[in-house]
Length: 465
Ligand code: C5P
Image (cartoon, rainbow, N blue to C red):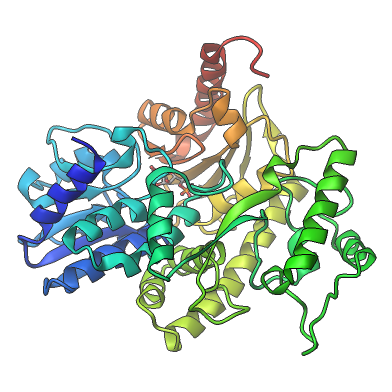
């Protein structure tokens, strides 16, 4: 049995049920995954209802309807099977489509999860697509959404491009004309909407001295290269519009600048994924910015608006999403400045900060991840925030780098073990994890995570730092 066999069996099972309830996560991967599954089922004439949750917890389990519909959990569920069992859900009425680490409970629910076959770079929207394609081989238009989910969940970050089944899905989307794959493109965020100099300056992976974090430096660099900063229409030029010749000039100059400063050029290039059918200069044009647009909808509690955009709405829903995106970016920037201005507390193997009730618990992880690139990248960052609907609980987010994961760090295990020992619950991935813990145990939790990380380093062997 392989992943495709699991997807096929799940597809067969799912189309035998009507109606179906999809319970999905509010982030880009969850929204894209929900759309893929809902579209594939609707095309079979199956009635679908969807529920979005911030996290599957005892509190949010109440949103799962207690009816006779078949329940498909997407981008969640693998790590919360005990909660499903506690809610009385039977094995024959549940399907889990996920990419999180499983935590077994008393029931063995049917699950499609790339992790079970060693595919750690395949998000829930990736798995959802494999199932949708087994429902009907004509569902290749949905590959586009799978790419967005995979990119949104950082599946391309470590390898500067999608790999394994996630890449095969992108290729399928490309063959069907929905996705344009650009090899050896500039590894930069904002290629469709950010003015070129801002795009270069905001990029710090890799860090190019004189350009990264330096908007004026980036502008002068482009002027030296005689690359026009504005187009004939008077608008700032974006990377996507730059001519092939100027692209070559810019990338080779960036590579030179890196090499002169002893840097490594391997992360300067990436494979990028564009959507030729979408209007230029919009966040809809490439997978990274599309994913941010969906994240901004979900993290601001409007995942259905993101779902409408995935389904093709470019009217009211899109305008609302644009508004949320502006807000999303502004608050994350503010949070980033808050972390950098206030500083983090450093322990032997961890750095942490508590932001009180200043920021929504749904975005602190994103801000912490961004702050990490400007802090000590050799120590994972832990951020705590009050959980709005329950003052007794604290939401925790943890982020680290792929380099630290390669050196043995596993935040999923640390979050799960530390929270379980202190009356909370947590999970996620090696590189990004989260937990919900009793407020009174905050300090003990931080101490415990630090100890667990120290243990992970020790197990990874000497010479790890
Ligand atoms: O909320 P945040 O973005 O920090 O979540 C990072 C990862 O940790 C996600 O994959 C999320 O599903 C997981 N998580 C979890 N349990 C929690 C909070 C987050 O498994 N209580």
